[in-house]
Length: 324
Ligand code: PBG
Image (cartoon, rainbow, N blue to C red):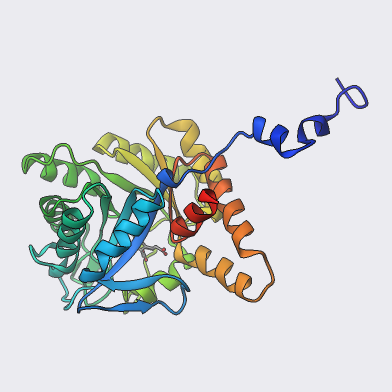
């Protein structure tokens, strides 16, 4: 059936028709809000390259968690700025480390909130790499044990899910085995399965103070040119026991999200990262785009590409918009 017999505009006539045939929806329950936790008391520092996003001290978390829950954003993911860094990243798995205290605080004060954690060493190592360095190399296998210990320490503090973002080979399997051994077999793993060596992480590295002192992350994060490799990475993580697969960044990699959605039957998450957020905020502040509408369109595009779950610094703003 062709024009003039068929007229697609018939179903776009008014908002009721448009709503009737809408294929993709956003819900606050599908958003995860990232929170940066810092040492000290009564501290709330705005991150200059991420307007509207703050580093919070542990005592500020209850308020933040309650606000998320009230907006229908049921999940947060925590990133920590430790008091001290060292070459082995030992601050990542201290019983009383910054993240472990943050988890306990949130689970005590807002128990219904799901508290997820990023499992990585880059915020805790003095050199800023995601693994430990032995003989001038990021040593994959020696890093695994530290990552597993970190994940277990998060679960022991009460984390509802752990999310390894380091991109060492074999870490999902190692973490799964360690969690199971310590009786945390009900704690799921959201793997940063397909994480690219991206320049869109710039503002995050300021926020979390985790830029590598020397070199870059291309020896472990993926080459932005590759998509078959994304399927291989995801396949490995499924086999090692991942419960959710993540693609990161999101908007420059919508094709990858879509491929993973077609190829796998696990839930897919996408991380709308710091640089993607910062660009919208900057152009919005200049009046060059309508920030709110670009935010909504961007997050919708990530859902349409196939991600059920979106990690985004816009989570609270988007939820507010959806509440109307
Ligand atoms: C830690 C980590 C990073 C991000 C999430 N976890 C930084 C990196 O890999 O360099 C980036 C998140 C963002 O840019 O919003 N490895």
